[in-house]
Amino acid sequence: MRRSLLFLPGNTPNIIINGDALGADAVILDLEDAVPPSEKDAARILVRNAISLMKFENCEVIVRINSLDTDYWKSDLDEIVPLKPDLIMPPKISCADDVSIIDSYIAELEKEFGIESNTVKLVPLIETAMGVENSFQIATASKRVSALFLGGEDLTADLRCKRTKEGNEIDYARKRMVSAARAAGVDAYDTPFTDVNDDEGIFADAEYAKSLGFTGKSSISPRHVAAINEVFSPSQKDIDHAYEVMEAIRIAKEQGRGAIALHGKMIDAPIVARAQQTIAMAEELLLMRGGRNE
Amino acid sequence: MTDIVKKAYAGTIESSDVYVELEPNEAGLDIRLESVVLSQFGDAIREAAIEVLEQFGVRNAKVKIVDRGALDCVIRARVEAAIKRGRGE
Image (cartoon, rainbow over all chains, first blue to last red; front, side, top):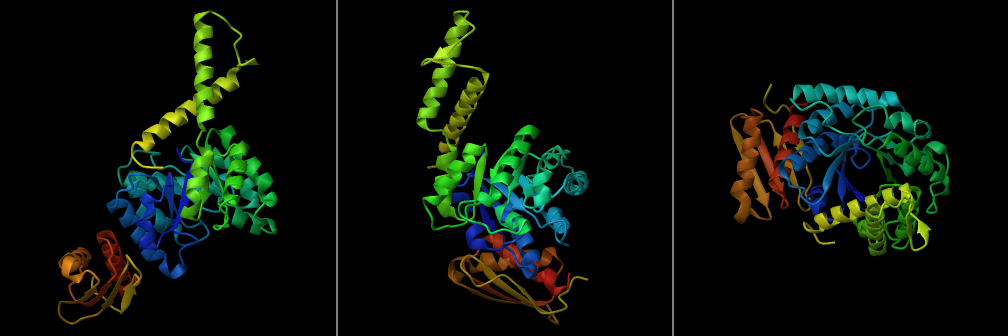
Protein backbone atom coordinates (compact mmCIF):
# COMPACT_ATOMS: atom_id res chain seq x y z
CA MET A 1 0.00 0.00 0.00
CA ARG A 2 1.33 3.37 -0.97
CA ARG A 3 -0.60 6.27 0.49
CA SER A 4 2.33 8.65 0.68
CA LEU A 5 5.35 8.83 -1.61
CA LEU A 6 8.11 11.17 -0.51
CA PHE A 7 10.71 12.59 -2.90
CA LEU A 8 14.25 12.63 -1.52
CA PRO A 9 17.18 14.19 -3.40
CA GLY A 10 19.49 11.42 -4.57
CA ASN A 11 22.77 13.12 -3.75
CA THR A 12 22.04 14.16 -0.19
CA PRO A 13 23.19 11.52 2.31
CA ASN A 14 21.82 13.16 5.43
CA ILE A 15 18.31 13.02 3.96
CA ILE A 16 18.54 9.58 2.36
CA ILE A 17 19.81 7.90 5.51
CA ASN A 18 16.72 9.11 7.37
CA GLY A 19 14.33 8.15 4.59
CA ASP A 20 13.14 5.10 6.41
CA ALA A 21 12.05 7.11 9.44
CA LEU A 22 9.99 9.83 7.78
CA GLY A 23 6.67 7.98 7.85
CA ALA A 24 6.13 7.69 4.11
CA ASP A 25 4.91 4.44 2.63
CA ALA A 26 7.47 4.90 -0.14
CA VAL A 27 10.47 7.12 -0.69
CA ILE A 28 11.41 8.25 -4.18
CA LEU A 29 15.17 8.55 -4.43
CA ASP A 30 15.53 11.19 -7.11
CA LEU A 31 18.29 11.11 -9.69
CA GLU A 32 16.52 13.61 -11.95
CA ASP A 33 15.48 17.15 -11.05
CA ALA A 34 17.03 17.17 -7.58
CA VAL A 35 20.50 16.40 -8.92
CA PRO A 36 22.54 18.86 -11.02
CA PRO A 37 24.21 17.46 -14.16
CA SER A 38 27.66 17.65 -12.58
CA GLU A 39 26.57 15.32 -9.77
CA LYS A 40 24.56 12.73 -11.73
CA ASP A 41 27.41 10.19 -11.53
CA ALA A 42 27.94 10.58 -7.80
CA ALA A 43 24.20 10.49 -7.04
CA ARG A 44 23.75 7.31 -9.03
CA ILE A 45 26.50 5.57 -7.03
CA LEU A 46 25.19 6.93 -3.74
CA VAL A 47 21.63 5.77 -4.42
CA ARG A 48 22.88 2.37 -5.55
CA ASN A 49 24.90 1.98 -2.34
CA ALA A 50 22.05 3.22 -0.19
CA ILE A 51 19.64 0.67 -1.65
CA SER A 52 22.09 -2.20 -1.50
CA LEU A 53 23.59 -1.50 1.93
CA MET A 54 20.85 0.22 3.93
CA LYS A 55 17.69 -1.40 5.21
CA PHE A 56 14.53 0.43 4.24
CA GLU A 57 12.29 -1.66 6.48
CA ASN A 58 9.48 0.82 6.94
CA CYS A 59 9.03 2.01 3.39
CA GLU A 60 9.30 0.96 -0.20
CA VAL A 61 12.01 2.38 -2.40
CA ILE A 62 11.31 3.96 -5.77
CA VAL A 63 14.06 5.44 -7.91
CA ARG A 64 13.34 8.29 -10.29
CA ILE A 65 15.78 7.96 -13.16
CA ASN A 66 16.63 10.60 -15.73
CA SER A 67 14.49 11.09 -18.80
CA LEU A 68 14.92 9.48 -22.20
CA ASP A 69 16.11 12.74 -23.74
CA THR A 70 19.25 12.73 -21.55
CA ASP A 71 22.49 10.73 -21.68
CA TYR A 72 21.90 9.45 -18.15
CA TRP A 73 18.93 7.10 -18.17
CA LYS A 74 20.76 3.98 -19.33
CA SER A 75 23.55 4.49 -16.79
CA ASP A 76 20.88 4.97 -14.11
CA LEU A 77 19.22 1.69 -15.04
CA ASP A 78 22.60 -0.10 -15.25
CA GLU A 79 23.18 0.67 -11.57
CA ILE A 80 19.65 0.43 -10.23
CA VAL A 81 17.97 -2.50 -12.01
CA PRO A 82 20.27 -5.18 -10.49
CA LEU A 83 19.09 -4.04 -7.05
CA LYS A 84 15.44 -4.62 -7.93
CA PRO A 85 13.91 -1.57 -6.21
CA ASP A 86 10.18 -1.69 -5.59
CA LEU A 87 9.56 0.60 -8.55
CA ILE A 88 11.47 2.63 -11.10
CA MET A 89 10.01 5.97 -12.11
CA PRO A 90 10.90 7.15 -15.60
CA PRO A 91 10.01 10.83 -16.01
CA LYS A 92 8.46 12.68 -18.96
CA ILE A 93 6.78 9.63 -20.41
CA SER A 94 4.63 10.85 -23.27
CA CYS A 95 3.66 7.75 -25.23
CA ALA A 96 3.67 3.97 -25.25
CA ASP A 97 6.91 3.92 -27.26
CA ASP A 98 8.72 5.68 -24.40
CA VAL A 99 7.69 2.83 -22.11
CA SER A 100 8.69 0.23 -24.70
CA ILE A 101 12.21 1.66 -25.01
CA ILE A 102 12.73 1.48 -21.25
CA ASP A 103 11.02 -1.90 -21.02
CA SER A 104 13.41 -3.37 -23.62
CA TYR A 105 16.51 -2.04 -21.90
CA ILE A 106 15.38 -3.31 -18.50
CA ALA A 107 14.65 -6.71 -20.09
CA GLU A 108 18.27 -6.82 -21.33
CA LEU A 109 19.54 -6.00 -17.84
CA GLU A 110 17.25 -8.57 -16.21
CA LYS A 111 18.67 -11.21 -18.54
CA GLU A 112 22.26 -10.09 -17.93
CA PHE A 113 21.87 -10.17 -14.15
CA GLY A 114 19.80 -13.36 -13.99
CA ILE A 115 16.68 -11.57 -12.76
CA GLU A 116 13.34 -13.16 -13.60
CA SER A 117 11.71 -11.49 -16.57
CA ASN A 118 9.37 -8.56 -15.76
CA THR A 119 10.45 -8.44 -12.11
CA VAL A 120 11.30 -4.76 -12.27
CA LYS A 121 8.17 -2.63 -12.30
CA LEU A 122 7.59 0.90 -13.55
CA VAL A 123 5.61 3.92 -12.46
CA PRO A 124 5.75 6.26 -15.47
CA LEU A 125 5.65 9.94 -14.63
CA ILE A 126 2.99 11.69 -16.71
CA GLU A 127 4.01 15.33 -16.94
CA THR A 128 3.41 16.41 -20.50
CA ALA A 129 0.18 17.22 -22.32
CA MET A 130 0.96 14.38 -24.72
CA GLY A 131 1.50 12.03 -21.79
CA VAL A 132 -1.87 12.94 -20.32
CA GLU A 133 -3.62 12.28 -23.62
CA ASN A 134 -1.79 8.94 -23.97
CA SER A 135 -2.24 7.84 -20.36
CA PHE A 136 -4.12 4.64 -21.12
CA GLN A 137 -1.67 3.58 -23.86
CA ILE A 138 1.20 4.26 -21.45
CA ALA A 139 -0.45 2.27 -18.66
CA THR A 140 -0.96 -0.71 -20.95
CA ALA A 141 2.32 -0.49 -22.88
CA SER A 142 4.12 -3.02 -20.70
CA LYS A 143 3.44 -5.58 -17.99
CA ARG A 144 5.94 -3.65 -15.93
CA VAL A 145 3.67 -0.63 -15.52
CA SER A 146 2.06 -0.95 -12.11
CA ALA A 147 0.95 2.66 -11.65
CA LEU A 148 0.81 6.10 -13.24
CA PHE A 149 2.11 9.18 -11.50
CA LEU A 150 1.04 12.73 -12.26
CA GLY A 151 3.71 15.46 -12.31
CA GLY A 152 1.92 18.78 -12.05
CA GLU A 153 4.89 21.14 -12.23
CA ASP A 154 6.31 20.09 -15.60
CA LEU A 155 2.80 19.55 -16.91
CA THR A 156 1.77 23.14 -16.29
CA ALA A 157 4.96 24.33 -17.98
CA ASP A 158 4.02 22.23 -20.99
CA LEU A 159 0.45 23.52 -20.85
CA ARG A 160 1.89 27.05 -20.71
CA CYS A 161 -0.11 27.97 -17.66
CA LYS A 162 0.63 28.89 -14.09
CA ARG A 163 0.69 26.24 -11.39
CA THR A 164 -1.65 27.35 -8.64
CA LYS A 165 -2.42 26.10 -5.18
CA GLU A 166 -6.04 25.48 -6.21
CA GLY A 167 -4.90 23.26 -9.08
CA ASN A 168 -7.68 24.04 -11.56
CA GLU A 169 -5.09 23.93 -14.34
CA ILE A 170 -4.33 20.24 -13.69
CA ASP A 171 -7.89 19.14 -12.98
CA TYR A 172 -8.46 17.64 -16.41
CA ALA A 173 -5.12 15.82 -16.29
CA ARG A 174 -5.85 14.40 -12.85
CA LYS A 175 -9.23 13.05 -13.91
CA ARG A 176 -8.04 11.73 -17.23
CA MET A 177 -5.01 10.01 -15.74
CA VAL A 178 -6.94 8.40 -12.90
CA SER A 179 -9.54 7.11 -15.32
CA ALA A 180 -6.84 5.73 -17.63
CA ALA A 181 -5.00 4.08 -14.75
CA ARG A 182 -8.14 2.47 -13.38
CA ALA A 183 -9.19 1.31 -16.85
CA ALA A 184 -5.78 -0.32 -17.19
CA GLY A 185 -6.01 -1.87 -13.74
CA VAL A 186 -3.07 0.02 -12.24
CA ASP A 187 -2.68 2.49 -9.38
CA ALA A 188 -2.63 6.28 -9.71
CA TYR A 189 -0.50 8.69 -7.68
CA ASP A 190 -1.03 12.41 -7.41
CA THR A 191 1.42 15.25 -7.83
CA PRO A 192 2.93 16.90 -4.72
CA PHE A 193 1.31 19.87 -3.02
CA THR A 194 4.24 22.22 -3.24
CA ASP A 195 3.50 24.79 -0.53
CA VAL A 196 5.35 22.99 2.23
CA ASN A 197 4.28 25.53 4.84
CA ASP A 198 0.55 25.19 4.20
CA ASP A 199 -0.57 22.55 6.67
CA GLU A 200 -4.26 23.00 5.88
CA GLY A 201 -3.84 23.16 2.14
CA ILE A 202 -2.24 19.73 2.02
CA PHE A 203 -5.30 18.17 3.65
CA ALA A 204 -7.66 19.80 1.16
CA ASP A 205 -5.48 18.88 -1.82
CA ALA A 206 -5.07 15.28 -0.66
CA GLU A 207 -8.81 14.97 0.09
CA TYR A 208 -9.57 16.16 -3.41
CA ALA A 209 -7.09 13.73 -4.97
CA LYS A 210 -8.61 10.88 -2.98
CA SER A 211 -12.10 11.90 -4.06
CA LEU A 212 -11.02 11.57 -7.70
CA GLY A 213 -9.79 8.03 -7.20
CA PHE A 214 -6.04 8.44 -6.66
CA THR A 215 -4.38 5.62 -4.73
CA GLY A 216 -2.01 7.97 -2.93
CA LYS A 217 -0.20 11.25 -3.14
CA SER A 218 3.39 12.35 -3.33
CA SER A 219 5.18 14.99 -1.33
CA ILE A 220 8.39 16.95 -1.52
CA SER A 221 8.37 17.55 2.22
CA PRO A 222 8.29 15.11 5.16
CA ARG A 223 6.02 17.66 6.79
CA HIS A 224 3.13 16.61 4.51
CA VAL A 225 3.48 12.87 4.95
CA ALA A 226 1.29 12.50 8.03
CA ALA A 227 -1.55 14.48 6.44
CA ILE A 228 -1.40 12.36 3.28
CA ASN A 229 -1.35 9.13 5.27
CA GLU A 230 -4.33 10.27 7.28
CA VAL A 231 -6.37 11.26 4.24
CA PHE A 232 -5.63 8.08 2.30
CA SER A 233 -6.30 5.76 5.25
CA PRO A 234 -9.83 4.52 5.82
CA SER A 235 -11.51 6.20 8.79
CA GLN A 236 -12.80 4.10 11.69
CA LYS A 237 -16.32 4.96 10.50
CA ASP A 238 -15.49 3.60 7.02
CA ILE A 239 -14.02 0.44 8.51
CA ASP A 240 -17.00 -0.16 10.82
CA HIS A 241 -19.38 0.34 7.92
CA ALA A 242 -17.39 -2.06 5.73
CA TYR A 243 -17.62 -4.80 8.36
CA GLU A 244 -21.35 -4.12 8.72
CA VAL A 245 -21.78 -4.53 4.97
CA MET A 246 -19.90 -7.81 4.93
CA GLU A 247 -21.85 -9.09 7.93
CA ALA A 248 -25.15 -8.17 6.25
CA ILE A 249 -24.03 -10.04 3.14
CA ARG A 250 -23.15 -13.11 5.21
CA ILE A 251 -26.49 -13.15 6.99
CA ALA A 252 -28.44 -12.63 3.76
CA LYS A 253 -26.62 -15.55 2.16
CA GLU A 254 -27.38 -17.77 5.15
CA GLN A 255 -31.03 -16.85 4.87
CA GLY A 256 -31.04 -17.33 1.10
CA ARG A 257 -32.06 -13.74 0.45
CA GLY A 258 -31.05 -12.01 -2.77
CA ALA A 259 -31.81 -8.36 -2.07
CA ILE A 260 -29.93 -6.95 0.91
CA ALA A 261 -30.41 -3.68 2.71
CA LEU A 262 -28.39 -2.01 5.44
CA HIS A 263 -29.75 0.98 7.36
CA GLY A 264 -32.46 1.27 4.74
CA LYS A 265 -30.08 1.36 1.77
CA MET A 266 -29.65 -1.39 -0.81
CA ILE A 267 -26.27 -3.10 -0.83
CA ASP A 268 -25.16 -3.69 -4.38
CA ALA A 269 -21.97 -5.06 -5.90
CA PRO A 270 -20.00 -1.75 -5.95
CA ILE A 271 -20.77 -1.21 -2.24
CA VAL A 272 -19.53 -4.71 -1.44
CA ALA A 273 -16.40 -4.17 -3.55
CA ARG A 274 -15.70 -0.90 -1.71
CA ALA A 275 -16.25 -2.57 1.64
CA GLN A 276 -13.81 -5.33 0.70
CA GLN A 277 -11.22 -2.74 -0.38
CA THR A 278 -11.66 -0.84 2.89
CA ILE A 279 -11.25 -3.97 4.99
CA ALA A 280 -8.21 -5.10 2.99
CA MET A 281 -6.63 -1.68 3.46
CA ALA A 282 -7.47 -1.60 7.17
CA GLU A 283 -5.89 -5.02 7.68
CA GLU A 284 -2.79 -3.98 5.77
CA LEU A 285 -2.51 -0.84 7.87
CA LEU A 286 -2.81 -2.90 11.01
CA LEU A 287 0.07 -5.08 9.83
CA MET A 288 2.16 -2.02 8.96
CA ARG A 289 1.52 -0.41 12.32
CA GLY A 290 2.90 -3.55 13.90
CA GLY A 291 6.21 -2.50 12.41
CA ARG A 292 6.14 1.24 12.98
CA ASN A 293 4.41 3.97 14.93
CA GLU A 294 2.07 6.37 13.17
CA MET B 1 43.82 2.01 -16.92
CA THR B 2 43.55 1.90 -13.17
CA ASP B 3 45.49 4.84 -11.81
CA ILE B 4 44.25 8.31 -11.11
CA VAL B 5 45.17 10.59 -13.99
CA LYS B 6 43.81 13.87 -12.72
CA LYS B 7 42.80 15.54 -9.50
CA ALA B 8 39.18 14.79 -8.72
CA TYR B 9 36.80 14.97 -5.84
CA ALA B 10 33.36 13.76 -4.79
CA GLY B 11 31.05 14.44 -1.86
CA THR B 12 30.62 17.45 0.38
CA ILE B 13 31.46 18.56 3.89
CA GLU B 14 27.81 18.62 4.89
CA SER B 15 26.59 16.56 7.81
CA SER B 16 26.49 12.79 7.14
CA ASP B 17 28.54 13.23 3.98
CA VAL B 18 32.25 12.87 3.26
CA TYR B 19 34.51 14.83 0.93
CA VAL B 20 36.98 12.67 -0.94
CA GLU B 21 39.76 14.17 -3.04
CA LEU B 22 42.15 12.12 -5.16
CA GLU B 23 45.35 13.15 -6.90
CA PRO B 24 47.89 11.19 -8.90
CA ASN B 25 50.76 9.85 -6.76
CA GLU B 26 54.09 8.31 -7.67
CA ALA B 27 54.25 5.49 -5.16
CA GLY B 28 51.46 3.94 -3.14
CA LEU B 29 48.43 5.27 -1.35
CA ASP B 30 48.95 8.39 0.72
CA ILE B 31 45.78 8.78 2.78
CA ARG B 32 45.04 11.82 4.93
CA LEU B 33 41.90 11.59 7.01
CA GLU B 34 39.97 14.19 8.97
CA SER B 35 36.81 13.15 10.72
CA VAL B 36 34.46 14.37 13.40
CA VAL B 37 34.53 10.81 14.70
CA LEU B 38 38.22 10.09 14.07
CA SER B 39 38.92 8.45 17.41
CA GLN B 40 35.89 6.17 17.20
CA PHE B 41 35.70 5.34 13.49
CA GLY B 42 38.95 6.53 11.94
CA ASP B 43 40.20 3.00 11.29
CA ALA B 44 36.87 1.87 9.82
CA ILE B 45 36.70 4.89 7.48
CA ARG B 46 40.27 4.34 6.29
CA GLU B 47 39.57 0.62 5.83
CA ALA B 48 36.43 1.29 3.77
CA ALA B 49 38.30 3.77 1.55
CA ILE B 50 41.20 1.36 0.99
CA GLU B 51 38.79 -1.46 0.14
CA VAL B 52 37.14 0.59 -2.58
CA LEU B 53 40.48 1.82 -3.94
CA GLU B 54 41.71 -1.78 -4.11
CA GLN B 55 38.45 -2.96 -5.64
CA PHE B 56 39.04 -0.50 -8.49
CA GLY B 57 42.73 -1.34 -8.73
CA VAL B 58 43.98 2.05 -7.57
CA ARG B 59 47.46 1.52 -6.13
CA ASN B 60 48.90 5.00 -6.41
CA ALA B 61 47.00 8.06 -5.24
CA LYS B 62 47.03 10.90 -2.77
CA VAL B 63 43.74 10.59 -0.94
CA LYS B 64 42.23 13.34 1.19
CA ILE B 65 39.15 12.39 3.19
CA VAL B 66 37.14 14.90 5.19
CA ASP B 67 34.42 13.00 6.97
CA ARG B 68 31.34 14.56 8.51
CA GLY B 69 29.90 11.45 10.07
CA ALA B 70 29.12 9.57 6.86
CA LEU B 71 27.80 6.03 6.92
CA ASP B 72 29.90 3.28 5.40
CA CYS B 73 27.76 3.13 2.24
CA VAL B 74 28.23 6.88 1.73
CA ILE B 75 32.02 6.70 2.21
CA ARG B 76 32.25 3.90 -0.32
CA ALA B 77 30.04 5.78 -2.79
CA ARG B 78 32.09 8.98 -2.58
CA VAL B 79 35.42 7.15 -2.95
CA GLU B 80 34.07 5.29 -5.99
CA ALA B 81 32.76 8.51 -7.57
CA ALA B 82 36.09 10.25 -6.99
CA ILE B 83 37.99 7.31 -8.55
CA LYS B 84 35.81 7.33 -11.65
CA ARG B 85 36.18 11.08 -12.00
CA GLY B 86 39.92 10.85 -11.41
CA ARG B 87 40.18 8.41 -14.26
CA GLY B 88 38.15 10.64 -16.51
CA GLU B 89 35.32 8.10 -16.81
